[in-house]
Image (cartoon, rainbow, N blue to C red; front, side, top):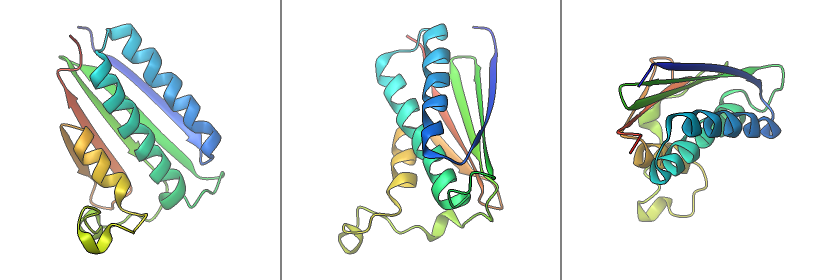
Length: 137
């Protein structure tokens, strides 16, 4: 499989999530991804972009969200970066703990960790990279 690279920069508006969704559709169609992986990649990526828009850039349309998608050797790497001040990923409470069940925040990162094969944040905490392995049939 040839290496594939796509980079998108969007304004921090929820309506721009469809641009990202279309890009994921386009890439996954062109590499023949299996449905199970398609769902994981789409949900995790949209969650990351949603977090970048809402929490990172505080829905300020003047701030941009950068999305990089790299496909190489049957793996896909998605990096989402915002222009916010970042956060400490370790500070997010576990949403599955009984005391946090009612909490609305913290679910996105939890979901991203469940869906991706691995996930990492940069030191500043304004960029997340998710790896998806064995993406094609």
